Amino acid sequence: MNIIEITESFFDLPQNTLNTKTRKRPYIVARQMLSSVLYQECMYTYTMIARIQDRHHATIMHHVGNHLNTMSIKTDETNAEYLEDVIDYKIKYKDFKAHILNHEELVKVTAHNFVQRYNDLVSAHKKELFLKLINDTNGLTEMV
Image (cartoon, rainbow, N blue to C red; front, top):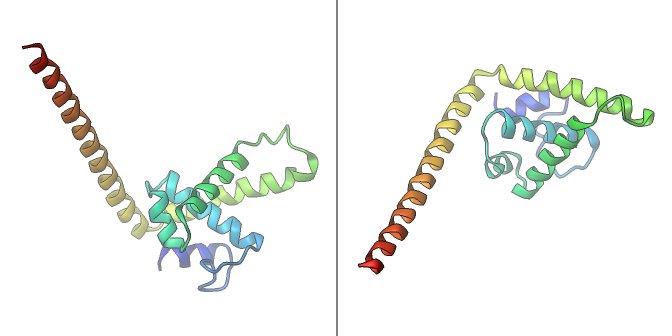
């Protein structure tokens, strides 16, 4: 079972429908929550998530941003009209996150993503140190 099928199953969506272009709320919420779990918990990049969902990376950034905004709403300050929606969203997300993170296949991929992103950061840091060394060396040569 892949991550899309797991998500469709959790949200009771018909099989092979999550990646369609529909804008119906249940699909948007499922995509938004999936994007957030993969980005925040599983170390996926926006581009990786976009490929999984057949979307543009900016759409994934939008999903994650909307998710963070919704999760930051304090339920004691929310307009009563939207209070139930916010509480339902937060509960659903908590359950979905636990459901997703219990899948062994995802944990293996997450570990791989972590190592890959770590290596990318190390490479970037080495490049930065190398460039700093070159700049420092150029300064020394100019002084001589």
